[in-house]
Image (cartoon, rainbow, N blue to C red; front, side, top):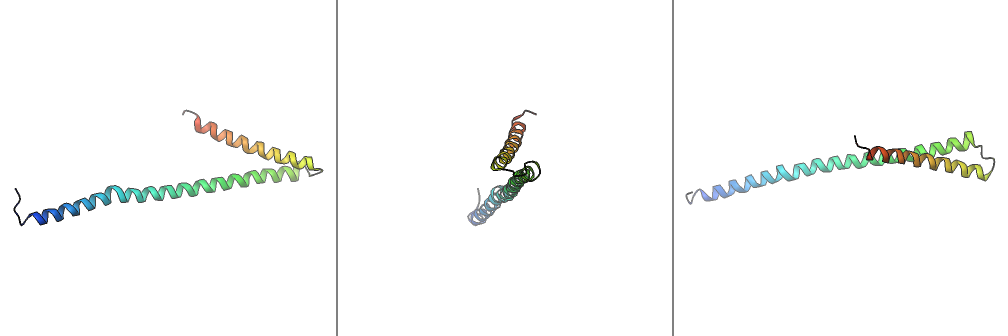
Length: 101
């Protein structure tokens, strides 16, 4: 049994140990998780922006080089080709994400 004069020291030590444990087991992992989540969101945003630019480049290439904008229908066809290209890329990504292996 602890003596009366040791009790305040033990309570202070318990409080300090609890504070250190909480900081070590909750706050520091939460900071690491926040940093990782931030970098993941930034990477996803950049990949999305790159995909938009890629589809815009495909559209521009078809509009300028293949279908030289002879009429409105060629413009619609180049938009359709860019849409099909984007749908194929999204389908390929979804297929690879769902494949086992």
